[in-house]
Image 1 (cartoon, rainbow, N blue to C red):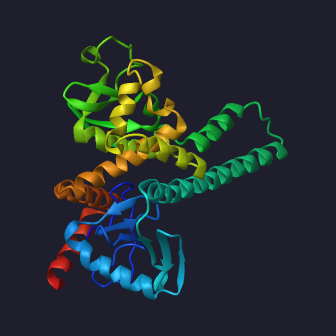
Image 2: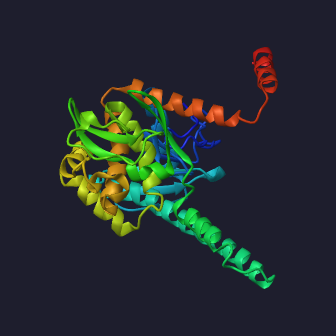
Length: 344
């Protein structure tokens, strides 16, 4: 079992309840279908566990849930709190819209509350600085632009933050927050849908009639496009959504086949206008796109493409390892490895 979230690369935490499955502080399970997820407490997304580890742990989860004293449940979904702070989410037999609304309502609702608190604290701190400068006799006109720029960053995020590193036909491309205004869905030959991402050295694109003659951006398709939307949509939807918005998104997703939802949206919205730009797609539709991107990787994994799921876990672990070691000298890292070989 991997220990890092495949979406945000943050640690999933540990529990001491399940000796054979010590990963996670919130575990969701479906006994009937044999599905097991570890819910990331940083981004609230659900990480499907590898197939060979599920059945035994699902049985243990069912046993612990049944004996738990602190439980809250509806007809189909229950939540139990165990010792050591571990939470179990038991999935019964909900209708799919009910399950999606419960699962994503938790995710987007927590994200919304977290961002409101974060932005509120940032703006309050900025207000204190401005008030202090004013009290000290400094004129506000001189640094009004700086204050406005900082306030915009607090609300919208740092425009220079790198959100994703994507593989394109022309090599690796870094997508910054400011680039989101140029990322858009598209239809593409030989693929259900694609994604245009800007070339880092390109200018504002001049819209052409066909996708072939665009020189300052890349068209990515297939698994590369799926990976891109999974990384970029949480940044586009950084403020999450209310329960009402989540219900609207679930309704959109359930209007047809959820597995083809992204392709339907790409076909409906013209790639040669602002309609297809991720940041300009209607709010509830953006939430539905993020839901669809999550469920697509699970659908494929459950249909037998386990290697794709395991590859996603490995990549997350590698990224987390790189992040952990950014500030450590190589000599220190090598010393740790040698001790591990000696005593492991």
